[in-house]
Amino acid sequence: MNQNTKERLIRILVGYVGLYPTLLIVLTLLKPMTQGLSLPVVVLIETIILVPLTQLVSFPLAGKLIDMLRKDK
Image (tube, rainbow, N blue to C red):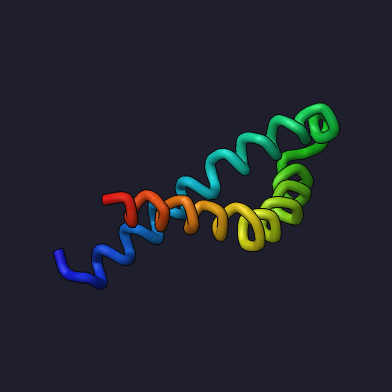
């Protein structure tokens, strides 16, 4: 596997590690507030919260975690 492909796979892994727990937490916390709203409004509210949260917090933390795990090898 060449270096470019390996880096892409690592970025995908960082995406999974950063997105899944963040999405799970946000959806769980917002469910009582968004329960009666239409799907497009719910998606809009969740997107407004999730994009900055994942880009500024979750993905950098996941990247550091993956880097720490790679250095231990």
